[in-house]
Each structure stands twice: as C-alpha cells, then as structure tokens.
Length: 528
Image (cartoon, rainbow, N blue to C red; front, side):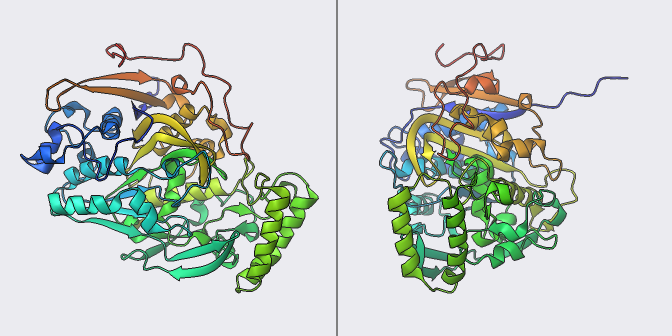
C-alpha cells in the first residue's frame, strides 16, 4: 500500500520594514513606479508616486510571499488579488477601526487601528484585480462608542476616496456597519444614536449544531454580550439556535480582505485575523463575550472565589436590569467611579482573562459563517470553505499590554499575508513571542472537527516565506528580490510582547529557540 500523500504546506508571506509610519501622508501613494501599476494609473503613473513609503513596499512583498501570482512578480502583468477574483468582482476591505483614541500614555492610535498606508496599498491591488467594472468597499463595525469620522480621518479614508475619484473616476465605498452608536460616561451608556448601517441590509444566520458552542457545555443563560439587555444574547443562543446578524455587503461580496492590527486582546489573548471578523456583524449584543459568574460556578467572568468579585458580578447583574430601562444611570456611574478609585483597573472582570471560554468560540462561529456563506446563502454541508479570504496583518507598529483598546506601542516593522487565517495568526503570535497552544482561539481552530476554516492541522503545515525586495537605483521601479523559507519557530521574538494583565504569565515563551532558522536552497537573505 502506498503511503498517504503529504499535506501541502500553507504559505504565509512576511515582509520586514521600518517599524513606524513617519513621513507617510494620505493618500499614501507608493514611492516608486511599480510596473504592474502602469495598467492601473496609465502612462502618467508618476503622478501617483509620493515620497518615501516603506509600508507600501512591505505590503507588496508580503503578498508575493503568500504565493499570490508569484510567477509574474516584478513584471507589468503581476496581479496578486487577480489570482483570487475575476474582473468585475466586488471586494470588501475589512480594517480594524475599533476605536478613535488610545487612553494609554505609552500608546498611540497607531497601535489600535489599521494604518491608512496598509489600506492604500491593498486597495490599489483590489482595483487592479476588479477592473473598471468592479467595485471596492471599505466596511467595518467598530466598537459601539467609536466616532467613525475621527477614526476614518486618522486613517486618511476621505483622502483615499477623493484620490480614487479623481485619478480613476471610481468610488471607494465606505460603510459603517453599525446600526447604533453610543456615548459613555464613567463606563455607563448615557446616549444612543441610530445609524443607517449597511445599505445592503443584514442576514440573520443560524449555525445551529455547527456552532462552536453546540458541544461546549456552556450555559446560554449565562451568556453576556455588549449591551445591558441580556435578552438578545441569550435568546439567539437558546434551544439549539446560535444566531448572528451579519452584514449582507460582506456575505455577498466576491472577496473579503481582512486587515487586522497585530496586538494583544483582553478576552482572546491576541486580535489578529480570526478575531477581526467580529467587525462584520450588525448587532454586537448577539455576540456572547463571557459567561456570568466565577469559574467555579459555571462562568468565566473571573477566576477564583474572591468575595469582592462575586459581589461585583451580582451587583452588575442587578444594574443591567435597570440600565436596560434607562434607570439608575447616575447611581451606577458613581459606583463605577468609587470602584475605580478603590480597586484600580487591573483586576479581572467581564471575562478579560485566559480562562474566557466564550469569546474565542464566538470568533470561530463568525469565521465559519463567512467562510461557508456567499450571495446564494449558507453552505454548512460543504466539505470545505466556499469562500477565500485574504488576510493582511498590519504589524508595522503593533500593540502590547492593555489591548485591544489601550495598548502600548510596540515597534515591530512587519506585514504578514495569507489566504489561511490560522496560518497567518500562528506566524503573528510567534513574532509576539506567544505560545499558540495557550491561546484557545488558535488551538481550537487547529483542532476543530466541525466547519474548518483552515487547512492547518499542525504547526509544521505552515511555511513562512520572507521576501526582501530592494529597488535598483535609477531603475524606475525594477527590483532585486529574494525569498527565504522559514519555520514558525524562527520568527519567535527574543523579548515577548507584554500580554494583557489577564493573560500575563500564561502565554509567553521565554526565548527564541536556537538553530531554528531554515532556508530554501536557492534563497538569499536581505543582509546578503
């Protein structure tokens, strides 16, 4: 009997670059005349060339490292996203625009949201792929207290829209997928503002037995979401149902390009590709975030048996009932101020720790829906995903510590790309110095026996291809490029990222392993 065929390794493209965004100004045009862009911009392509733009070059290198149209790289015919969609297609760009400010003194908005320079580079290749008859959409559902106008201004979205309208005569559609925005004071909602939401509407999808919650043993009555009213969270996950309200613009498009920021996360340890799809939903209160109560009583809100934590949990449940009716806002705000003064902000609450068994399952559910849905509906009986999603991770300036909302800036200088979400996340956590086996979101996706969104079943299935592309002086965009094939362990940070307090001491590797760097026979390093 012949031996079973070896599984094909999954590629992740990696590009190293300068770890900052200094000197980059919207609309973030490239700093050289790349041959493949002549078709997009025409003979006057030089008008689209700006000053130094190292991020554009890094995105380009990461795409070819991922194996996208690799044979034609460096020629006028190179069309990386054209390998995934046909002319006339509709592409959705899904950034991480979670919030418009970073309260951390050692952090900036650059470690919170996807930078506009990454958006610009990917958008150019999206336009190249879809052609004059296609369309490109930027869509995201930020946290419900995010000021869209401010975060979009930081990312240069208006400048990108204006640039494409003037230069291409095409409209970059921009959609805030939220149906409601709120305003907080002292951690309490004091105002609700209705938003138009997705013009294409929303699709209520029931995963049922295909949900990661189906055999989890978690009690849906304990599920708590993003708002005070627990009814929608529990009702949509009761009686065998596991329902989510998702953007029709996203589910019906031909290609989603997922553009997460590389940073830590309080409920799942890290953000990255799998977590970033939380932003394709239209009602965050249908998303279970944690199970109320301590770990010893069937919840994952907090660990241990601390009387203070138990009292806080029960008081919060009482407050939810009143706040859902708009009652007691001032009293709860006063209590929150007193609590912050007495306990600070580092104690574990609301499932912000490594024992959270809820949020990662919710993330996996959203991925399952996207990968097994298209314009025709859901295909949960399919043997493999019916959709390809391209992920490009912005790790130029990453975030550590109190992510995802208040991280400290961590200069990293990396852009990663892959059509496999788990593969690219595994590479990213190695750069962070974290152990994927201690991150349930990643370990659960790898071991998944349900609707698989990844072809990675073990770490050895992942091949990281690092690309170095150096422009020849005076060559009008021609370049010398080289690639290096690496194992995951070779990426490991010498100094791990600082994890979120609820994950600290649980996920970090001590140091990078020695002798783990593996190269292809024909590769040459950038240093050479």
